[in-house]
Length: 298
Image (cartoon, rainbow, N blue to C red; front, side):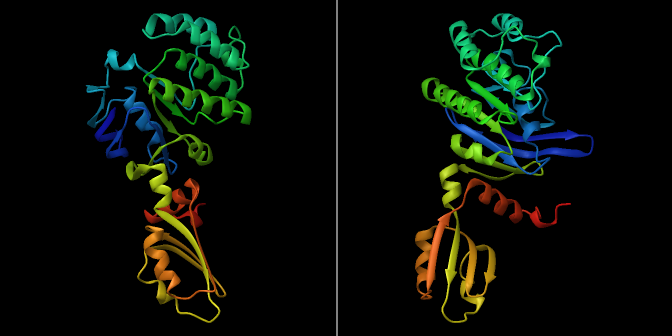
């Protein structure tokens, strides 16, 4: 289990993380999303001990994660731009990893080298962005981590490899209860694989819930009337967004459909439909709710 307790990280006057607190349960796939500069990458680096927090602490399996070899031995982190030396290959990096990680799995390493279409003896620095990510994944997963941290892992991967990556992650979560945190702007990919979502904005948590609960908590509703109607009829509902085109209203409503649908049905509309939002639509609505103006980004 990962416990993030009042974590603050400063870069000069910039407060990248601001008293951030939430937990990540064992065996979950936790998606970390947020506006640009929200602190997603910084948080992953703090959790992995790359950065020391300026306040608060990160506890992994009951131990502080910073400068703790026993914790780092069971964690694997792939940053947005994986770093390798100029002469690094998968093969010679694997040799180093065998000495550093006590749970290194040679048989699994050889299997992954056949799953991904990549030459273990080729210099990683000469590979494409997507192939460098594949190389990093082979090495990270071969350490058999209890905790896997991924920053924009789907960026640069073709559709076939993306499916391979998601399948392998789910297999490790199912078989070994590996815990995964993925920071990404690709919300469609996260929707396929994550069971929990944390939304960040300006270094703080906007929302942290199970994905299904988060999506079912907000609905898009279309309602139309045969006769003119005053918009005040919706005042008793938690309407986040409202658009009107003639007699048709498009509403974004927070709450349980079982609660608000009878109220809308009582208005005797000519047409009424409610649908849960996609993760991307939830993200946009939540970001607008904290002042992130989607319509005025230059």
